[in-house]
Image 1 (cartoon, helix red, strand yellow):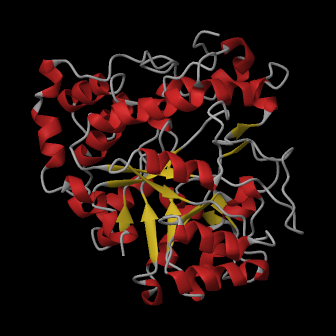
Image 2 (image 1 turned 180 degrees about the horizontal axis):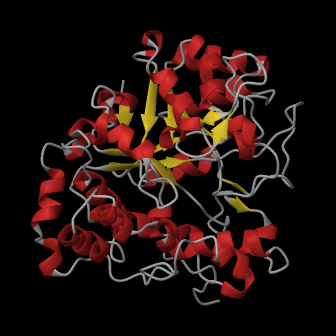
Length: 405
């Protein structure tokens, strides 16, 4: 099957959700990863690396996807490949196209190969942190394959990292309700995992549940960070679990002494104010995250991952705030959320210019980088952004300090 997006399966109503027809089209043209000389020598790229030490650049949010055709156990729910499930199928097609992978070929090998090619376009010494992804589980700790969209075993993320030393690190994913959760965590640490990744709405994890306490105690004892999604989740279809993305539910982990990284700084959606009496108005999830960030007791424990914050559906007050709040910058860390930078409709350089984040000349260069290397696109865009005279500090991109302890 050739790379394609089944636009008919999206439907007119879904197209209407976009503010306008995407300025760069719906699909990634997947040009050669080698930049043309006129682009490779552009001053904007050189300026992006000023003050950033490549050996400390660990992209903390890189999805590792596959079909299991390499024997490593990666899995995608068959529904995502069926035309009778058009929403799931469309998401699957977008992800593959974003990564420039054709599912008629060896997806596992091609996906990793593309990542290595894109990384070669970054400065020498950088590393990508590959995310494992556990199944959803029920309250008894039993895996729910029918309720899961994809699965990336810890062993697969570990083995890919080991095959490419100096290029990748890996982040485990372990559901805390599993009977073997603590022993699996200890195994992952022994195998070199640098953190644990959760996506609570998709995985059916309530971070505020006492069921998580033994796992939190182990995370604190092992001094392993928890990278947890917070806020509205749209990357996978979630029927009725958005409340699990409320950032205030992560207080329980913080109060156990766990270092928590809130993915995307909880920059979408709203949630119940769990600190207030019942019946109080819902607040933006980002405002709830900001409340946690401003509590002195969580200094050194709570961090924010800025992945996806430059997407069209996220830019605005949350992005403005993280740029302005330079008192937070030592607690912000960079992630790309790859392959999403390759999903073309999610980004708009025109909107970035209209809002004053970048100028027309910068937009032209950044837009030209993207079809060649979405990782470099993500980095240069973030390093170029400015708001109210503020920009992201170089330290945000030197994320190794959080994981290499």
